[in-house]
Image 1 (cartoon, one colour):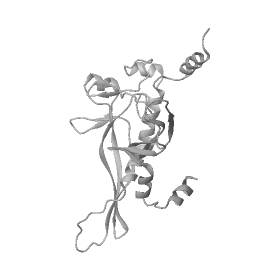
Image 2: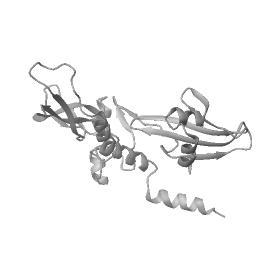
Image 3: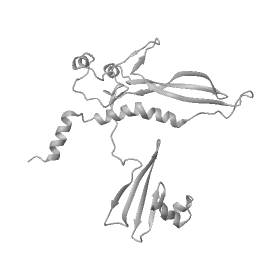
Image 4: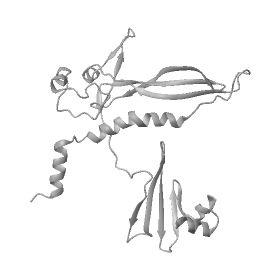
Length: 241
């Protein structure tokens, strides 16, 4: 008898590709995470200014990419498709553009768009030329219609990003163990922007809670809380409640 979960998994993959999550992750990176990274940089204020300028600020505004292009030896630009990238040992990549504004004394004096680099494009993502092509169109462009994509072409070679399972950031996970020095453990990956630091809170057999992070192992949790400014025991109890 086939187990129910096996039926559900089989039904899911009848309607969804195995690499669908990888393509969705890449699309989100381009649509959301690139702009978030630029926003986190903030304003750039030079430390050395001309004598007649009191305030000079550079602001990074909108960032976006186009579909993969190639610049030929004569300077002309045109679209490039995966089959050409494979045959010519090229990287299937798209240009990245950034809008930059210059403010002097709080007034915008200049705004321009600059190409700041290129980024490899995942095949079959929304920024790939193959996206939403019909079977006949894929064959016309030298592609296998059954190829699900989800990989990159770097210098003509097909490359994939290995998916690694990890804990969800900024969410606490509790673990109970009958063996080892700690009976209860709470783990969290504290993440802000590109930085992610694992933390672990353990209750040892003596009943005391300890905190571990980076190179610091099993520091009494109450000592850390007091070092952060909450020095009264009653305040710590009220915060926990």
